[in-house]
Image 1 (tube, rainbow, N blue to C red):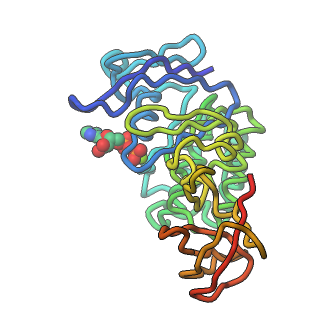
Image 2 (cartoon, rainbow, N blue to C red):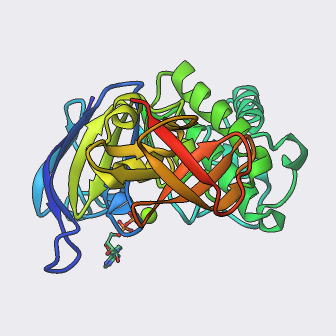
Image 3 (tube, protein in one colour):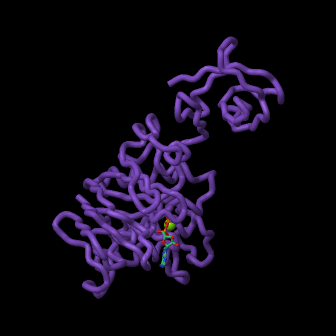
Length: 304
Ligand code: ADP
Ligand code: MG
């Protein structure tokens, strides 16, 4: 189990993280979400041992994670970290990058492992391509495969699919996260993309103003978002008194209701339309299966 105990940290006097406290079980998938600049990458770096802690402790099982003041070489064998920059070797191939730290004394083992990982990240066609010729998204996939080569016990992923296009993202997410589960590798994913979280994370932490403002399963936080910031992560929402936070898909247009609004704009959204309407001089957003004409008068109800 990873234990982060009362960690406070800042690069200067300003605190980037305050009294951060949480655990991650072996094999668990934990998502850390928060706006840009909320400290997600900093937290991953601290867990990796990249900086000395000013206050607090971090443990993986019985081993204390120590920073550069105590560790000549940053990092531990049981933990891998895929940064937002990837740090690959540009002039050697995809296959060589992935297998780089595997023992050359077991060539068959090495070959098998490399091939397995190339499949997970769907780079079969590029196995023998030099990394410098790859796109950003392809490099990101090599970095993930390389981090898995020696089968760590815990993997830190910093916005792991940010450079990968939408055509491939969802399939790749399923491959990678299912692979981690099957190997019982714990992972911490820093992200601002709900698709990295929904369907995969066992728990999620919400960082805001240097603190953890919520920690629960994605389902529970979705159903009961205590703050607008949390609701905004999941989708379009409104704050309507006395109901509180209401997602756009919790509003139905009905024939007869005391709640009345006037349509302003309809946005095409793929499987539905997002209707912006004026309710008591404020914009509200409603998910609806049809486009509605501007100035149409509508009545709506709210479901829980
Ligand atoms: P996130 O990953 O959530 O976008 P970061 O952890 O990168 O957030 O950054 C958190 C805060 O720390 C930001 O205000 C950022 O400017 C600052 N910061 C990040 N890295 C450094 C650094 N190496 N030196 C000084 N300040 C930093
Ligand atoms: Mg970051």
